[in-house]
Image (cartoon, rainbow, N blue to C red; front, side, top):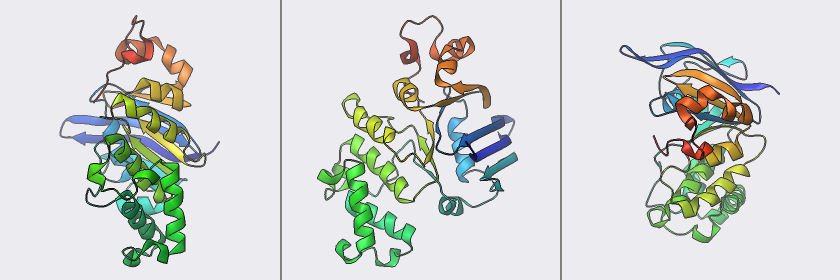
Length: 259
């Protein structure tokens, strides 16, 4: 496998606090990689650094070997580094169909025509139809976003990210706040994402982490605490002690539920 996204000795300080502390991380092409850790571990800060929302204090970020450390956030999206957010970033007055039509049109460079009837642009229509089916949104495609069940809004956000044709998709707690009855649909949809998209997932739901990820990185106090395949990390006594809960018979479910 080849590395698509990499950090080298990445540091982000806020005053005297090192929110990200000397993090070196590699995301392989086609990866299913989970980033876990207790509250305040620096997970979202790291995602913000990878996507250009924050500028690192020191260190390097590489995309396919190219230095993107100072590249603007919107240029990283154009290069294929795309994220979702822990809190939905959606246009509540639009419908899933119009939201996707806008996203697809922007990516295809035809956004000045996005408001025209969808059938007037065959390429946009075809891609929207594919995304609506993949993300189980076809039955609600004409409903305003604000009226959708929360799980459907989460699915729409991931669909919008995929509309940008990501090479690396960063999912920040995709099931945060989603009722238990709606989580399975999200689990199954994430699991079925295209194999050529490299995925880095932040998540506290250990069922999702251990069923989805092939590689797991544990952050503690802004630094890489442990890393390896799912089985190795799940059995690491240090990880159990600080995160999974040493001696707790519930196993992975002993992880904190949010934060």
